[in-house]
Length: 219
Length: 219
Image 1 (cartoon, helix red, strand yellow):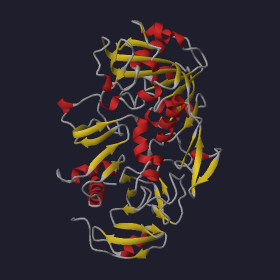
Image 2 (image 1 turned 180 degrees about the vertical axis):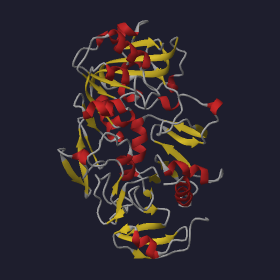
Image 3 (image 1 turned 90 degrees about the vertical axis):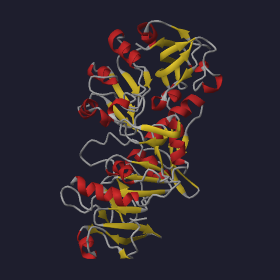
Image 4 (image 1 turned 135 degrees about the vertical axis):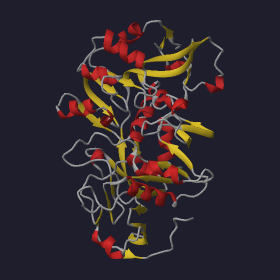
């Protein structure tokens, strides 16, 4: 997956976020999203290790060793930020106080099941906050490439990898399209990067409804 | 009880016995009580330990040092993956890993410290991490019963303490420390700065001193 593909997915996902929303960004593509949010976006970022009001990454000389995000990378805090312990952070998450979680995935099913933490036969030793976030956030946006590094479709009829949670995805953004899960239905709502419906069908291992809408990306 | 103010981390950790369950604060190494961990590594013979910590340090740093001494029998954590040597030790059968979603991990420690006998959460239901756990449908939604976590000894880090053991944390170095301070028979805190009684604003105390048994200055 090239950096350009990742950036395009992140840019489109950024267009899903609205002023005033509290958003938790996962590791990987979601972490690129701040670069596509304007300084006045009004989006408030939460990191599960205990900060509401995440600011931009610091310049090298500003680095505070006590201030990191969930990827364990240095961050800054914006005016109006608040710190809290991990139990309170996850109370915010499970309690439905986080508007949006954006995260990567290995597979997403047509029913909105997400598999993003374990590969069978490899170690299943890191889950972090993924299960809490997909269950607790009011809206779950998955950002991922349409196919795996081995070329296998990642939007599937049923996940083959261990589940993170069942029936939780609301939006899937890939380099080719946007899918929305509405009323138990997987809908293709937008084509990206010049892709056609047939291009999307070629890399999607499940039927879907074509319900193209106007782009939200420029909002 | 108020905390005993000790000058020696070695003396403070002498309470740890072989076979004990030891909680260790920190998200990665941020907020980790490195002075106490190093004292445990360098001056204690206690082995066969169960470590409750979000991560098992990093290679050769923090709990990663204790891991290299093969003194950890079991780990309870949300993310072993941040230390490849911990993953290797699990895969080699040298330590038993119990993987817990991060929010469940935090809440189980909170419950342990608050005298709660367990709680039901939607997180993990229907996944590998709920296998063998009691389930109950609440409000039409599957929930998993999670038991509290309690330790023999907790090791925590605070940026500032007063001489009674009241603790104040800085930025995202707070994370699991205030929870773990409540959930052990003996809580040992190390503080970056120890100030006289009365020098901390009572409203800014995060961990009241009754939770803290032993207090040492950070190295």
